[in-house]
Image (cartoon, rainbow over all chains, first blue to last red; front, side, top):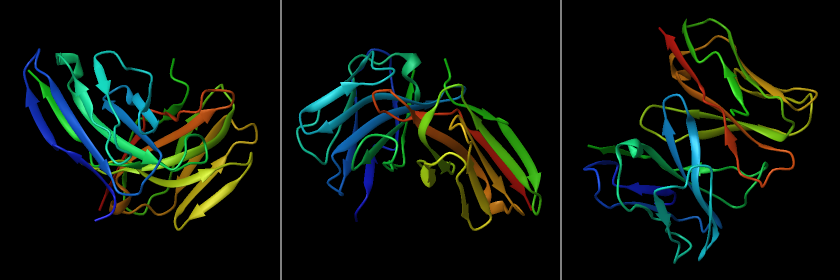
Length: 114
Length: 112
């Protein structure tokens, strides 16, 4: 089915472990984004990518790593998870970046770091 | 610094009532978008307002962009339980690098 998918939907891990969240889109959108959503903070941009092999930091990139070897995939890795990274993570894609582009969001991954 | 302030944060009303949600900023925006997010799902775009003073209608939802392009409002007429969700405004400040900035959202609950 066309769309944007995230896996896993739920993840519980321990402090210090490496975790990778997957994101896959079938629209061939150029741009992909990772956000985290926390109570009291709303949606905050972690990293974004303009195309394969092009990534850039967002508002809150510390502790996260991204890669984009293929246009359709944009995995987010927490190299050494911390409790402060407990959050709901959303991946999104769009044809372009900026004020007149609609972002399409995945269903989210709820991550708990113990 | 929160560039987009939404109010109220929470709103609980009865079916059939009207309501207005506000999105305010001290910055000028090229446009503003409104998204709705239901529990367990990602946000979905409702509308984009581009021109200062613009009014857009989507069934019972009316969106307005302020003349100075610093604020927007969402008015729902005769709210229904299906309108329940988190309403987010988002925009790109004029002159910024181009990434969307989101407000913290208004959580709406419409009771039957």
